[in-house]
Amino acid sequence: QVQLVESGGGLVQAGGSLRLSCAASGRTFSSYYMGWFRQAPGKEREFVATTDWSGRVTDYADSVKGRFTISSDNAKNTVYLQMISLKPEDTAVYYCATKPGAGGKYDYWGQGTQVTVSS
Image (cartoon, rainbow, N blue to C red; front, top):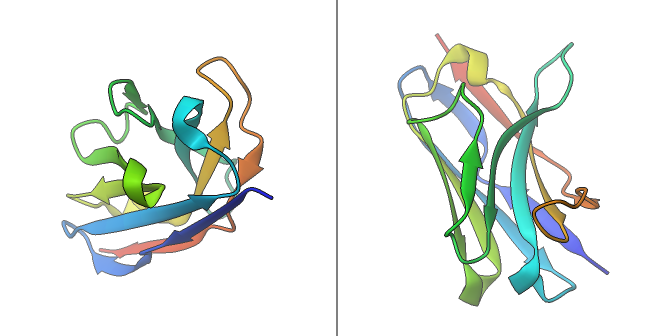
């Protein structure tokens, strides 16, 4: 049973930083991709960042490029999202997800962690 458990969310002032973690279990993830998504109140869920487990392949939404960094720790089966220079518009529930390869669909999702950025 694949499980993804996010942590690290919270309340931060604009300009601050947070690091989200996603602990993964239940499969061998080395050939899978991991992604971060977010959903703000009243909006659809949107892509934030993705990586393969080697960290050689990464991609980011334009809105977070230069501020967010996705990384992975294979030994801990954990993916991170380091967020700096946070803005009020980054406020959302952040979800991690996994998919079987670059072209696959995300098939498992975590429960989400709330990030609130105050102005």
